[in-house]
Image (cartoon, rainbow, N blue to C red; front, side, top):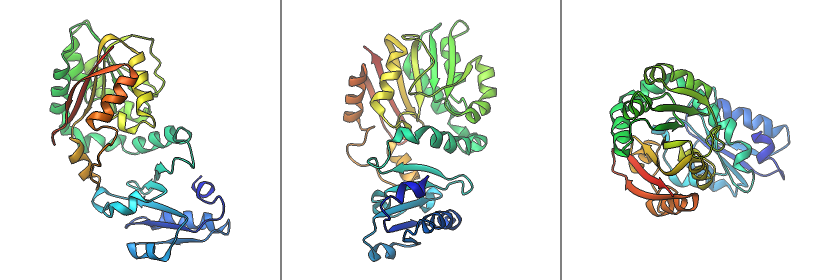
Length: 297
């Protein structure tokens, strides 16, 4: 797919990255050479001076290796090689390919490869999830859903909030993540549903509360995603957008800095929420968490 994508017009292609990228870079170069396309595999910034390059493919590995912000910002394609046996396309220049054309398969591949070890890496986030759920003010007996529930870390706290008479749903687009959520889902008496957050298999106005953790930044169209969340939430219902790390801390973990005007900045997010039918009530972004609460109009 990448060879077809970047090979249109027979460009000069630079494949760049850090260690542990050689195998994938070699495969891509071989695929391009079959099309008689000039491709250089680099391991250092000095290759940029040999340009101009028509296409730059950035291969990123572990977060500790992610330096050179300018290199990644000028890449036309970014491939995630955190798991070198399971490459995941994370970015394609928008005018080349509608993100909807590759979003679903790539997001499933990304999380499927990590489902088995997710809780061993992030399993100490439980108290942060519980605190975020407590901040929403969920009434006993409510119908709540964790959309993009992953391994189910929020499900027990949601059950505690709604009590015995409430309904708890856990939805995720990756079946492997839902499989890893079996124990917390059973403890929370939560139904698990394989579902794409962009087109939820839920009726209009079903939910009293929609809870999401780390979901919104993964969606190809944030406003469209928020609109779908609004569709399944009743008027006066609540939305929680949560992450157990603040945006600055999370960006640093991934080797980048937060730039002004990003979609989850307070002003752009408030605008997207308003366009989607929500009113932003709370915006909290310290280093220890990100939490935005909104009410359905």
